[in-house]
Figure (cartoon, each protein chain N blue to C red):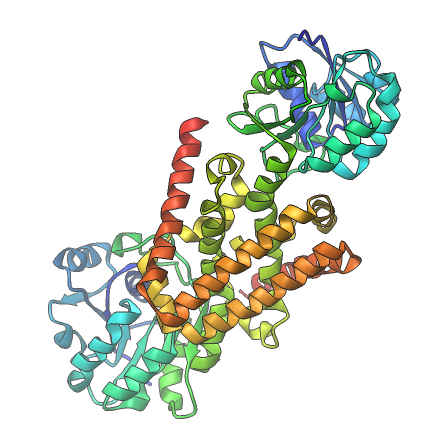
Length: 291
Length: 291
């Protein structure tokens, strides 16, 4: 697939970093076009060099693109699909960087004419920063980038995204939307909910005022993710309800198991701690080897 | 209470840091005596200036002390109380820095002749380091130090420990052993178990091999505490069984509440996230103000 022009819709920390990474990449020769609702954001994206040019209109920004990347909050994507659908160049590949995939794929299927030229994407690159000012050219380097496809997705769409992923220094990992949503629910959404739930359990306790003076670094670290945007958390739960609630149930079953062994004060409790410690160690070693 | 000689039993990161802090303190004029089983540790403690002198024998190390601080693992303390009991100077105050308090108080009561001169202590200072080489003179600065007493504890014992806490730059917080154990179970032990349980839930999943490639910074942070010593975790659960299992139950109830609201996709879910976020923010602001 020959991609000469890429349009990035939404110039926040992810969209902006994507633009910076593409423009810096030696292998990418595309023109990068950007759209953001805010004029300030568009100006800042130009100033930082995150895009070659910006468009003031959403539909104009996609009209000559060979590939369109939606980098807006997931809840806005349905409306964007609806608006851009009949303004896309025939054969243009559409992708997104949303953090849940089943809903986005359904909207793509509903609104896009060339519905099969959609392929989902999700960069597993974390940033505490938000907005174009937090964009970094190396945000995706040595990270995993999910390429989310199903049986109907044509090979060229998936290949185009894998090519883009390579350009920005990430490693593509191909999977279905259902797999993706289940995986991220376990390793990303569940930890976020657990962080908030730890605060809720402690801070609603009668003696929290005194108790809180004993809370230290460990509590701070284990609840840091409760500090993020409540709206983002809420919308994430809405778009990945099933997988998240299944993981909460799975997690409760594991906690009950720990509780049983603590009550029995048995050797199996030591095994639980040891196995968890070893599994985490293996995971970290593998990640550093791969990336 | 006039304290002229303090004996520190156990020269690990806590005992060593306590010695360094006392010797550096301008208000403390005590001689600091140290005991450790290992000759290497004793030599290193002397070299680092954590003690004025060391003893090769446990019982000799307490014989002229006005205050004795047990800074060994909790599981060894019962035996230490037994051994030092009839070698203590009359009127000597005994304290400890163990991370659970009910068991230690019971052993003190059982073995010490002057059982009422015992007062429990627990510095809420975290260190990833272990051993004398990790000792730092400023470890306790601007931290909370629990002074654990009950109705039978005489005021002079509790005052002596509060004085020591002030010397090392920490803030004393007086409470009973039951309160202490309940508080630390909520803000310290529960988070540790949750960190391990998050790894267990994920790593025992059939598709962990693929899923683990999507795990990133958030998962790493939320499971970092699963990397600590499994034996320490196990012994911590043994010595604070009741409070920990009650907190696990409380936490499960909170998780079920989150799960219900995620299934209903309602506004109350947003409130849960918001309240947790705000409670954490208040906690952090108060801590920085106080300390």
